[in-house]
View 1: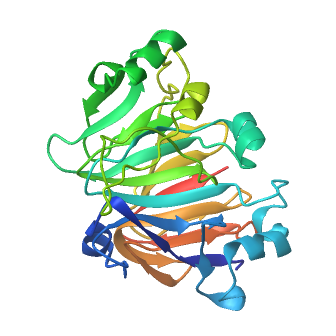
View 2: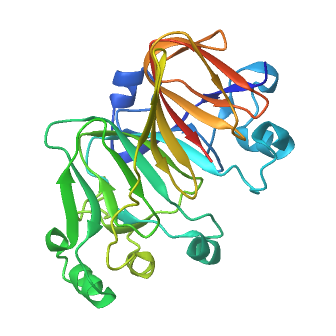
Length: 311
């Protein structure tokens, strides 16, 4: 049968977090200021614990190091992907992430390319993606003069929207969003702007202005154009949202009992709607699991909607 590994998420309290992770998924969040569910992660800042089977109680990072065969014997020195669910009760900071070269030199880390699938958004919820500066000098001038209304590219979003955010892209998730995020396994964030927001002690959060200027792509090039491909049968619909250098992401709708062949080194699954089974194990909304390399066939029964991330 092979290994299907269920994850115990790690939760992060944030100045902009809320309680929708509890309201929507019934997660045991630490407070009503919980912003992030690290759903599948082997990063040192949020290493998930395996909940089932012979490896129950192990951290994902340890399993990856000790049993690389479960992950297709890939050569990455650390588990390469990270899956989050993000609840933005307030606006996140305007930020940008470095690429692999800059992150390796300055942070001893992977860079951070990511993507977002909008699980839910309140009416008129916005997102920041990209900027209007045409040169680095113009970017510096906008930042120096605090002219973010002129600098930032903003637009409204809706549930079901998908966005690809390569490293070097200025961006921000805004108030009212519930987001599925797939990314490189990195926790490097450079804050460009945080609305002069203050914490309980009256201090503004640290900014990383010079690093942000260093890594921001100028001019903004837009996101990778990807023609979505859909495979549909009477038992499932699979919609490929992106095939990018670091990951591929699909939305999988299971209509009724079906079997799918598994050819990946491993696949990361998040149940975003419904309940059913995977290889005769019950699953429901809010659960996250890894289908390992030794699983050749996955039997689903639904109705279920899942996000699927692979290399």
